[in-house]
Length: 405
Image (cartoon, rainbow, N blue to C red; front, side):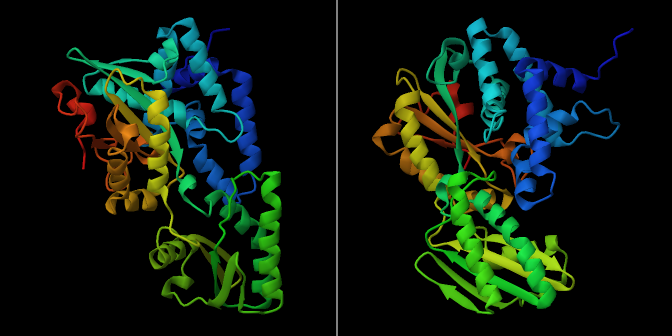
């Protein structure tokens, strides 16, 4: 029997699956299908979190439709992974395969490896010779860049925006899913438009997939809200949480959920956690905040200070390429427009830990997937040069270190 002809995309997918292992790939896709089948908020968030796996899987589907920018980017990076495996030493190939397999297990994602591959491709496009020293030689840094006789070490790292939040989005989505049936029942008996404002003074920690240690906290808060509604109380508070139930007065309350969420986001700002439950003609909105402002940029600065002394040798100029995970378009734009990333990065560059660092860069999924401005950054990353570093003005390094803002 003649072997079926593969499209270029299908060939990329088959090569990638061969690299990570067919059994593990099937298991991952099955797990994602099971976790997201019910259409819950947490399930939809999981689909976004594991977008790389889902975009890769689409490569195997024959279709005449034009590929999205994200599909083009992820296909190219998957092809880079397969090509890289062929060029690495046997030990380097094993390390690459191990990192990919780690990204397909449990709560992990493929983002760390794809951030590495994208960063390497970005630097190569700027005229650098790129060596995968971390994989090939087990160096503490990931990439060795060479250009015009000058070398630099580059570290790729991923930091979660959740590290700078007291209220985690994963826990919030799961809380909203738990409460949703109660709200639908309540709305049937009390038709109208309602807004439950929540201040979670002690925060709310947790991931998208429920962990046993998190279950009690969510159950207690769920029970408290349910009791408040049953008793028809308008307020409840203690040291941990403040709850207040008011009429929903937004003019867009008659719109669909997407339009309403957009209006709520404008009303409550990028830091608010929002959910909408609709039943019949009734609408119930929950809007939650932590007891203090988010410190996402500060969490990135702390991560920079932690990795610089351990992952750079100090014998060459060092670049820290940070991938900011678990953030959305509105928050990413806010971090940039309010100069929070720039402020914290430049503060880090004044600290002793930053002596080997010639530049810090920041990117998110928006750049990884090729989204244009104003959501994504035009040059693919934000860059902040360290003016105190001896190599800060070396012309050969300029494409990788000159500040972008």
